[in-house]
Length: 88
Image (cartoon, rainbow, N blue to C red):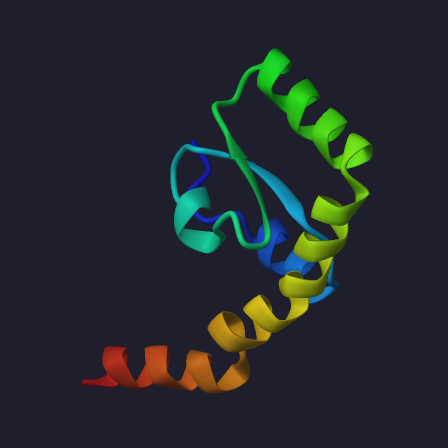
């Protein structure tokens, strides 16, 4: 199980949609406005990749949403909010 896949944040910040597993912390790091969440098996991963290849409008919509999603949820301001919560 992936605790909180940092690679998801990196991809989104580059404007790249993500295909992620519905496991661990992945559904907390992203949602289906910026990628596809699937049960992690070969058939589902294949279907997700095929969907993005077959549906360029879907890929374009996800791509357009990726960077703004990352900026809103994972900006340095958000980091300061988290650190302030730990500092008490």
